[in-house]
Image (tube, rainbow, N blue to C red; front, top):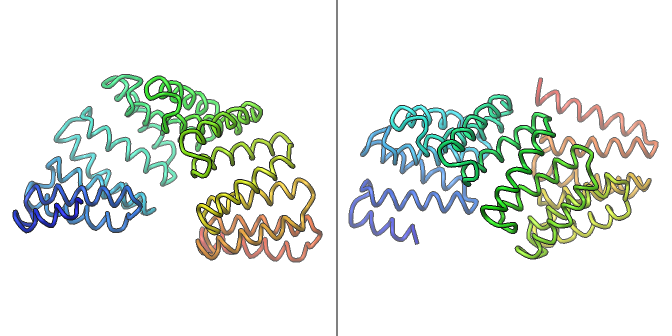
Length: 350
């Protein structure tokens, strides 16, 4: 629909008319939110260039197009380029709109998020904390934008290994979202999922298990049994069964989730492979190393095929395979595989 409007506006008004560019911006937005990141980047780039020419580099509409370019670059894994664009947009927004304008704070939030993806965790944490405080002061502590930034603060705390603080923040966000949106809202359920992660990380697996049982029920009620988010909650349940030493139950849950993921998402989807690995982990803990080896090898081969042999996930899978060979007493093969993985890691990070 937006493409049709953009084409008609271009015919009647010209390619650089603000209404034509507004429609092209919406085309880019729809592309980015439906997984067509590369096409969206091209569309936003064209809009940003035309708006800069017609309106000026610091016009809010020009900056909006550049900010969406940065978002899409992040979705494409091009985080360093995204950082450069976010930094330029933020400087312009602060100069023209002031530090407390909602658009300035949105850009600072996105910059904080992207810093985390660059591994600059302390900077990400500091910036996200500042944005959360500003949004709380201007919008209120329970405003959706404030809670989004506090969620990012909690995520970064987890990445920094500060799990007690992360858990406390996730719990506060989950409670506030339940109050604002309702207990079954996707944002509330997303925060509750992260609460479960935090509980598991802190060794509180029994509490995590009960949380995930409730979450599976809620996700199934809202989204259905085959939705990826329902399956993520079931995966979390299975992981915590394993942490509690209930490996037969964990194995059954991992197999059941893996079968649904394979049917819904495909054999080589990352979530399917995560479930396969969880099956192998459970088999190993049950002493069934020969069966585990076959599953680890399947995961490693699939990840190499999809991601490339030097991808960190593919290398981790080969390490899993080597560990399994070691448990089977096949030490020569295990050492050879460990050496190969080490050499590939050295090549990636000399």
